[in-house]
Amino acid sequence: MRDSSLIARFGRARRDRALAVLEGFHALKHAMRFGAQLVEVVCSNPRELERLASEFAPELAPRMLELARAVPQEVFAKLAPLPAPTHVIALAERPSVDVAALLADGRAAPVVLLEDPRDLGNVGACIRVSAAADAAGVLTTGDQDPWHPEALRGAAGLHYALPVANVARVESLQSARRPLVALDPEGEPLTAVALPARVLLAFGSERRGLSSELLTRAQARVSIPMRAGVSSLNLATSVSAVLFASRLSASWRSLPASEE
Image 1 (cartoon, rainbow, N blue to C red):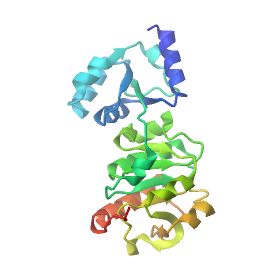
Image 2: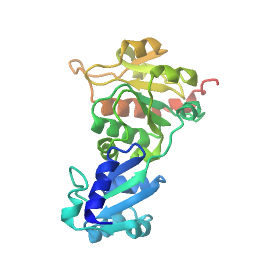
Image 3: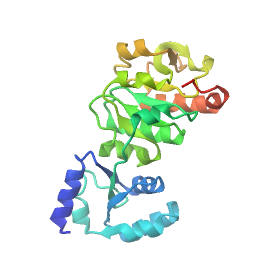
Image 4: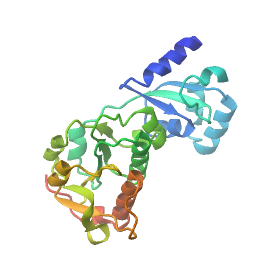
């Protein structure tokens, strides 16, 4: 493939809802580790890629180096608005997500719902912490694509570790028989509440919080205990605090799953 065709291909991929753009070594590593179907891997420094793979993902190194195609630095610099400092970028197929199946999953783990998030880097950070906490999945509402390259960069490619999808309407989640719990400053302190095992945890943006519609639909509201005078937390920090507080309290395991 000629350099101009490669540059055009990566440019189109950023707008293609069937593809994911994986910028950097760690995004590629995580995507491969969790089963991504790779379409293209390009690097501008094969020796550096070999070093990173040997150090951080030795089990993936042979396949990664086999797939990687070397290009000049001046070509690599045109494959993304901000070239990855680890000198590698890749394209992968996006997995299809069956939202109904995700919500019906009987595993004792929560699903994270982000209502109309605006900052794509923050969306990626939420996905990253949700994967680390072994959540069942992450859903978003609104017009932002949770698989946007900026979100993938913020998540370090961990979109492949759990289902991630955008849903058109909150109403579509009501048949899941998962209790909807909203994070709200006026809610019960998280320290006094044991979350249900298969909770649907709803988070709003830092600026607007959750909509009145979603708050009305919620069966319960919880808050994060904070020092007086601190008005709010970053969205990803809030998701992290709630998920790990729940995980460390073992509430997912000690409470029975909601009846189907």
